[in-house]
Length: 127
Length: 147
Image (cartoon, rainbow over all chains, first blue to last red; front, side):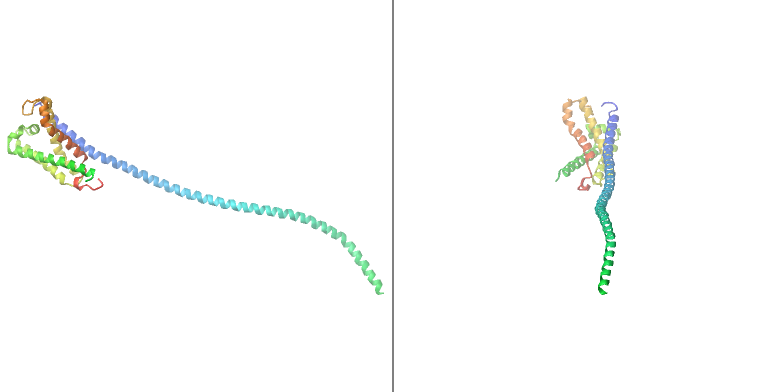
């Protein structure tokens, strides 16, 4: 029998057993760490997803508000065009009214004259 | 029986028959000094030279520890219970490998290496299978279905 065979055989058996049990215990621990990372990653993804959902809702609300504002602006613009037309027409009407007033002012003395003449004629007949 | 259950069955069988082997060696060593010359036993006899009772008790102790492990619930204690038998089995297998390499049994009997290989191969294969079984077993009948 080789000298010290039992020594190195026993040490080799101990080392092999230590490696076996070390591997058996170390692997689940590493897998657990890996699962922990997965869980934290999933949690982080969930948080980011929730934030993205909130931002998406806020953007949707903002877009709806922008659409409403655009409708209001379009209505204001439409009414502005109407008012512009009305002002333009009122300017035209004012000129016509001024012209008519001038005509009327010219007619007033003639009407007065005609009334005076008419009154005189009627006075003459009564006598 | 599903594949994982079948594998677990074989693992537990290997551990179980190793336990039976060590218990048998322990009884034989306690019963008679003639068993000390057998190659797997001869090397381990050097752990406690000249004290076959101590060696027999050690064989029975490692077998008992493994038996306790087989009945234990999954956990580190169960795995630790299998280790003494693994150390003994690996030591015996290394003794067998040394005998094959030298072409001589540990009791001094000279034989061709292939003869010793054919004779001692079961112990070497059992030691390898035992290490793999301890490394991969996951609780036996106590394990949950998801294991």
